[in-house]
Length: 289
Image (cartoon, rainbow, N blue to C red):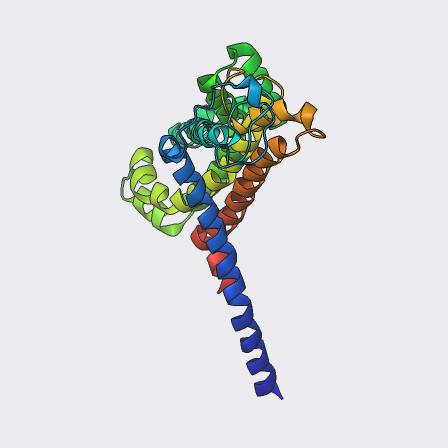
C-alpha cells in the first residue's frame, strides 16, 4: 500500500510540474512581448502617438487602426507601444533609485558603524511611516511632474522595502562562521562586505528588484491617472487609462487595452518574483530540501 501511495504521489507531482512550467513560460513570454514592444515601437506602427485626427475620433478596429482611435483621433496601438517605453523606463528608473537608497546606502551604513546605521534607518522609518503611493505623491508635489521626477518618487517610496530586506540578509550573513573567521584574520568591514557578504546576499536583493518593479509600474499608473505623472500628452499606460475613464461606457476598448497590458505585466512580474525568491533565497532552498 505504501508503494502504491508513493507511486500515486509521484504521478501527481509529475502532472503538476508541467502546469508550473507552463505558467512561468507564459509569464516570461508576456515580459518578452512587453520588452519587444518597447524596443521596436517605431517599427511596429507608422502612426505617431501624438497625431490627432478629429474626424476619426473613437473609430473602431480597422486595418488602418488595428486597435481603433481614442476620443482625440489618436491611434490606440501607437499610444500603447510608445506608452510601454515610458512606463517601463519609469519603472526601471524607480527600481534603480530604490536600490541606490535602499541597498547601496543601507549596506554602506551597516558596514560603517552602528551610529551610521541607526541614523540611516531613522531616515528610512520616516519614509516608511507613509504608504508608498502617498510618499510618491508627496515627492511629486515637491519636485514637480515629469519622467525623472516619477523615477525619483517611485524609488524613494519603495526604498524602505529594500532597505529592511538588505539589513535582514546582511545581519544573517554577518553572523555566519566564515564571516567571523575572516574578521578574526583581520578582514576589514569593507573587505567582508565586498568579498564575503555581498556575493551571498545578491540573490535576495535581485528578488527584491523583481518585487519592486511591478509596484513601480502600478504607482506610476496611479500618479498618471491622478494627473501628476508625465506631461498630459505623454503616452503612458496610466495616462491612457485616465483619459479613457470618462468614456468607459461609450468606448470601453480605449480603457481596456492599457488596463489589460498593465494587469498582464504586473501579474507576470509578480509570479516571476515569487519563482526567483524560491530559486535564489538559500533559506527557502534549504527548507525545500
